[in-house]
Structures are given as structure tokens and as C-alpha cells.
Amino acid sequence: MERNPYAPPSTAVADITSVPLTVNREVLLACKVFWVAFSVSCVNRVMHILGIATIAPLPGGLPGALLGMAFSFVITRWVNSKLKAGRNWMRLFVTAGAVLGFLSIAILWRVYSSRILPMYAKSPINAAFGVLGTAINTWGVVLLNLPNSRAWFAARSERLDGSKQSQTVGAAMSTPVICVFLGLLSLLVTSLLYEFRAEHTFYIWVAGTVTVVLLSVGAVVGIRQGVWRSEGLE
Image (cartoon, rainbow, N blue to C red; front, side, top):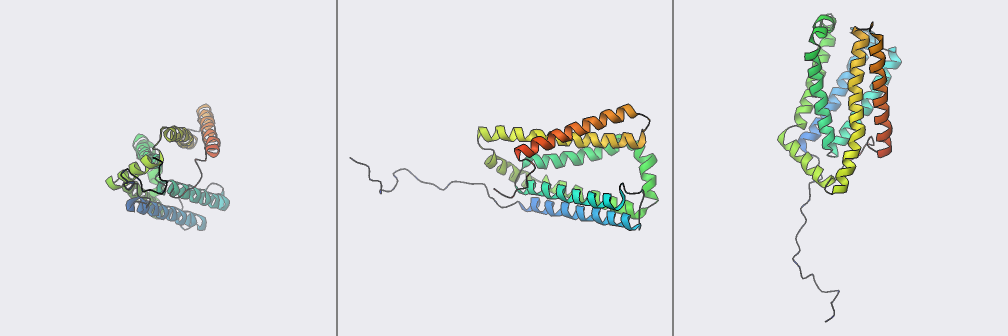
């Protein structure tokens, strides 16, 4: 008997359960919070430029301040685009950065207490903006790690990396992210050495070289793989 191509399907048909494409409310709020933190940092830089409140001259003066704000805008936009797209590695990246930031304060507390805190004590406005910016960013990180947020990222990861091939691609794409992350940590170490241990030129050059290599590799590989491309929901 020939099969009738117009006959209804004989097997049971059920709706496919899919992961919601809408952005989780807490994640969306976290992205808005990071934009608020960016705005606070811009206000603080403008106050530096106008000389209203400053603890140290801005590197590069006005052009340096404008370049710093432009760079911060690009980074904030890129981070938020990845978070909205459900990239769990970005959530982990942001969380690890926040944790390491607080750990650096604890590890380098002698430097902070003897040099940095006295500078902020001379400028209460800068201190207030610093505390405010830190509190806002911390709030955003907490929002990204709430149970609902973690569940949404997990569901999105299953949808985006459901196949073995996709998981392999995802692992490869994490390489430039790790390189950039380590490069930024190395940049922090280099800056601290230059600021507080300027006599150790050899270590400064080594740390600076490692920073350039890591950031360069991460940037080039990331561009080739499309990791740094802003994206929306897929």
C-alpha cells in the first residue's frame, strides 16, 4: 500500500519545550545597574576634569579622561550584551573580577591603609563616589548570582551549547576570555609595582611584558572567533 503524503502523522506529536528567550528580570536589572555604575564613574571623572574634587592628577589630562570614559562605555556595553545573551561565562567572569577586587584589598591592605585611604581622606567627595560605585557594582554582581538568575543562565547554556560540537566551540571561545582576564590581573600587578615599588624595574618590565602578551593574544584570538562581538538574544 502506497503511503499517502497528505495523510496526518501517525505518531504522537507534542509541543517542543524550549527555553524562554526573554531576559531574566534580575539579569536585566543587573545590566541597568552596571550602566548606573558607569554613569557614576563618568561623573567622578568630570569632577576630576573640572577640578571640583581630585586626589591625584588624571593620566593624560582631558584627552586621557575622555579616552577612559569611551573605553569604559565599550566594555560596559560588551559585558551587558553578553549577559543579556545568556553567556554564563560572562557571569562567572564578572563575579570572579569582583571577588578578586575585594581579595586584592585584603591582600594589599597595608598599601591601601598607608597610602590610598589617606588620599581619599583628603577628598570626601571622591571617597563617597568610590564607595557608591563599589556598592552599585556589587549589587549588580549579587543580582547575577541570585537563584533565578543562575537557573536562567543554566537554561540558556543548555540551549546554546546543547550539542557536543557547540560545547567544544564554547570551550575554545573561553580561551581569549581567560587570556584577557589574566592580562587585566597582570595589568593591576604592573600598576601597583609601578606606583609603590618603582625601584624594582626588572619585575615591572616582566609584569608589563606578560600583560601585553596576554591582552594581545586574547584580543587577536577573540576577534578571529567573534568573542568580542556584541550580541542580543539568539
